[in-house]
Structures are given as C-alpha cells and as structure tokens.
Image 1 (tube, rainbow, N blue to C red):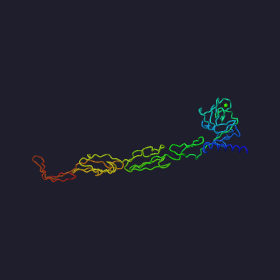
Image 2 (cartoon, rainbow, N blue to C red):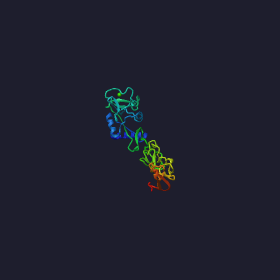
Image 3 (cartoon, protein in one colour):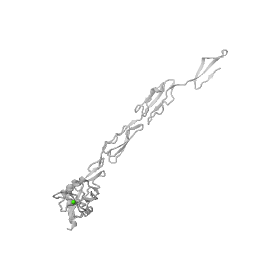
Image 4 (cartoon, rainbow, N blue to C red):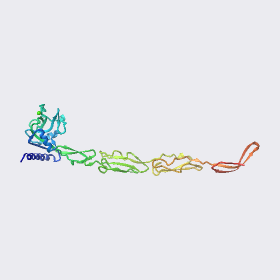
Length: 348
Ligand SMILES: [Ca+2]
C-alpha cells in the first residue's frame, strides 16, 4: 500500500465517521496526519482535494473538531493566520472577531514569524484552544467540504452550511423543506358588476401573484385596481368595489310649471336613469322630452324650465276714426283673432 492509498484510506475513514454523525449532505470534514505538513502545504492539499482548510467559524465547530478528531502529537493546522497585525480567516481574509478567538493561555505570543494557527486537539492543557506557531512546522491537516449543492435547496432559498447538516433559508414568501412552496393568499372574488384577471408566477393566489380588477361600463372602480399577494400571505390592499356612475340629482321644481318623471333601473340618478319633462297645459320647454344619465355620469342634456307658450295674435277690426277729435277709436267688438307667428294690423 503506497502513501496515496494510506491517505485515501484515512480520508475515507474520516468521511464515513463524520457522515454517520451528521449525514452526507453537510459540511464534511477530512483530516490527514500522514504526513504532517507545513501550513502552506496543508492548505494546498485541502484546496486540491476538498473545499478548503477548516476555518473554525464558530465555537460549536471548534468543539466539534476536538470531539471527533484523534490526538496527533503535532496537533492540527486551522485556516487562520496573521495578516499585518490582524488574525484573519485565510479563506476570506476577514478579521476574526475578538469574541470568536479561542486562544490558549498566554497566546498568541509575539514571537516573530509565528503567523499560523494550530488547534490543540485533545491536549491535556488548553484542549481545543489555539496557538500561533511558525508556518514551517509540520502538523495534521483538517479540511472541510461544502455540502450545499445547487440542488440542495430550491431557487427560492439560500443554502446554509451547518455542522452535520445544512439548512435552506427561505427567501420571503416561500416555505417548505427546500423552500419550494410559495405562501398562499386567500382567493379573490369578482366584485359585483366587475371582474378580475391574475398573473400567477408561483401558483394560483400565491406569493407575488398579481390581479387586476375591471368594472362594467357605467361603473367606477373604488379602491386599488391591482393587488399583489405579499410574503405575509395577505393581499397588499382590500379588493376594490364597482360603484355605479352617478349623475347630479335633478330638482323636480326646476321645471317650473310641469313635472319631472324619472326612472332609475340601477340607483337614483345613476347610470341609465332617465328623466322626462312634462309641462302643464299652455307651457312648453325647449329641451328634449327625455334625458339619460350616461356611462361617465353626465346627463345627455340639461333640463329647462317650462315656459308659457308665446301666442301672437293678429286681429282684424273695424276701426272707426273719430276724425273730429283726431282720435282713433278702436272698437274690438267685431274683431277676429288669429294665433299666428307674426303680427299685423289691418284696418280700413
Ligand atoms: Ca505561540
């Protein structure tokens, strides 16, 4: 059995062991102590075969390493190092926060060139604590592999690595183990005298569905015309209503000597209401006999008051001029009256 086979066997054993702890789809860890390596070589080995050197992202991960890894006389490198005066995760170059640092007593010391970090796995003193060391020393290697794949969660989620598992962190509006299900909103009904149509990107009345409402002719939409299903499972506005278009109320006394007779098939003085003017005997009006409330809420004509009919009379009389007094005396006793459109004096 050559060296490569030994390494593979070692790695395989570790994978099986850790997989049995947390399942195959999780951060999986792999370690090697045959051989022990310098820090840079250890990281290159991790990058070549796995995702990277274990960065120790949390206290939980730190303690987990101490639990599952075997003792190694040289201990193990971790993916933390010194850049300038800061201790950083080498994978991302992010500074390791103070409260996430887990130094052994009196570490890190200021000895020159101790810019790499080891973890004391199963050490009697300061177990699981960190120590800065010369990067050239040879130690065990701990690598990790991301478990999230493009198929781990649906496209509506972020896959979050955890120790021994992974989780799908759902985007707002989605739920389910893989966040594949969009949150539902209550179904919408057509308003009276109206209708609605919807676009459903994630299923009927689900998150981000949008519905537009319309009203029949002669009806006005009251409210917001377009509704959207929110991540909370509620529509962003109440469903709108359709209200009949209304015309100005007509005052029956405005016609004067006559009456106003109206019919309201939908609502008083509203779309399709009709009103007719009837004048008293001897009176007439100049507008149409009937007006109607149209679909935008306007009367088709205005109402005019009834006025007395104009009678123009011509009369033909026997006129006897009283020449002696130079006065014209009219005697209407023998007059004949003619209603007419013009007026004319006739005398002889
Ligand atoms: Ca040290």
